[in-house]
Image 1 (cartoon, rainbow, N blue to C red):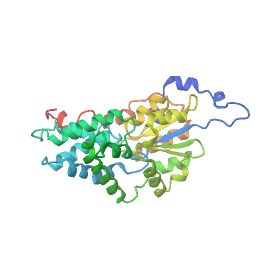
Image 2 (cartoon, rainbow, N blue to C red):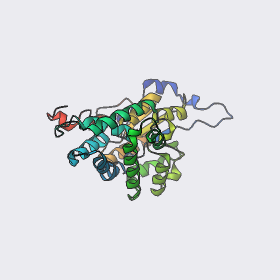
Image 3 (spheres, one colour):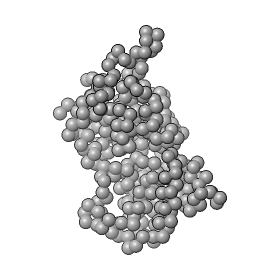
Image 4 (spheres, rainbow, N blue to C red):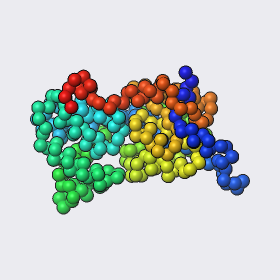
Length: 312
């Protein structure tokens, strides 16, 4: 199977971006192709350490209230590493985890705290297009809209402190090779759901920040909106990511997409680098049945305790 069969782009994109349209006039520089790279779990080997060592243990600490600690860890890791919610905003991930807890076969009955916090969290998320620490602090303040979210704020601050204590995450070697190889070929944009300052610090520590033309974080209003605003109508673009949110952002803006399969990151980067050396990455074929199908299969819709017979 050809490597380029793993990339996807709408047919209309290939029709609408002939080479002559990439120049506005003889006086304007050509539009540089855009390559948008997710950070956590895609370029940097940071997704699993953050969730296993910071998010999941603190989720169990702040929300267990008598439930088995290992159940909370299992639920958190499924939501954020093995499900179609992988890579989503931490507050949306918390909402999903709280909902799943009540249906876990090892939970005897729903805890009142989960219902109270979950209800307030869902109402807040419905009103917040871009949930952030700043907006949570306002909502959780004593005179704020949702004071019940004070526990969520405490948890989130503890997570930030725990992550700050981790060693800087390394880049996948294949990702480093790709960034170095394509820096002069296209505009490289980091497209992340994490705070921009944290992403910049991690890329700086990994020795890659100077290769990025732009870093876009959670403050941008979402990956799809940020990508659409920077891509425009005609510029060819490729999104590289390890989560459904990256695929959805690519589809929403008409960009091509290449999956970095969780657990097979180096292999995925090797295939992408090979494809990029053979032809322009944004002139690609629809997805084949190989790496793209493996990517979709890796990210599950249902948790294992339901698939294996546990009651939802």
